Amino acid sequence: MAIKPKDMAKMLDHTILKPDATIQEVKKKCEEAKEYDFVSVCVNPCYVPLATKLLEDSSVKVCTVVGFPLGGSITEVKAFEAKNAIRNGAQEIDMVANISAIKSGEFGVVHDDIKTVVDATKVSGVTREVITKVIIETCYLTKEEIIKTSEIIKDIGADFVKTSTGFGPEGATKENVGLIRKTVGRPVGVKAAGGIRNFDDALDMLDAGANRIGSSSGVAIVTGKRREEDEEEEEE
Image 1 (cartoon, rainbow, N blue to C red):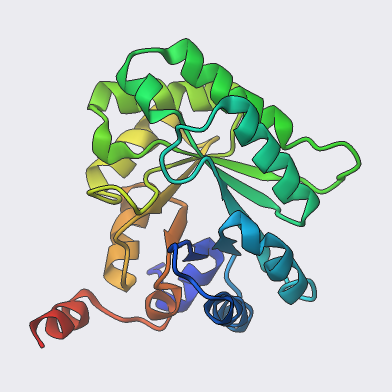
Image 2 (image 1 turned 180 degrees about the vertical axis):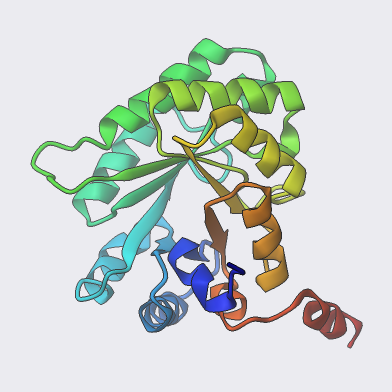
């Protein structure tokens, strides 16, 4: 059965992570998420309490980021960020792996960094299940590094491998999404993020193996905006 634009809603994290995002813009994203019934709204940690309050009477989850966008925070800080966000109401955590450690071949460091944050999501006194996604910023990695890091994430038991922060020089590609899916198989989710602006982009990522999409253009995706419309706007 062909996927229709509205079917994308339950695979979409409606995202607002830009540094100059205002409270009004965050509120708008939350309202849009409720209207279109997205999976989550992904906000910076400072907006988790606000998003939690705005979404409390809906099925939309609150997602936030940890070690964002560079992944260079020390592990203890990432663990604290995760615990604090969960206590404030976050139900999904998108952490950035230590990209420098990956590039340096220090995969023991990569493993311990990710595992510590995954363990930290099991906060004492919080009974709800927390989803953990690990951002590996594929644009900086070789195929071998993507495979090795994805294998580590799978072995640790994180819920998703996520392609990108959206702040690197390149976002999600079909090739990298397919490589991650081939590596982790079906037990682990694959979240494509970065540069996904319309229905065609999102469909390409699903066809490649993604089962979650992160985008600030969620409304455009579920209302069926096509790639050629983006091209026409750029020409204008």
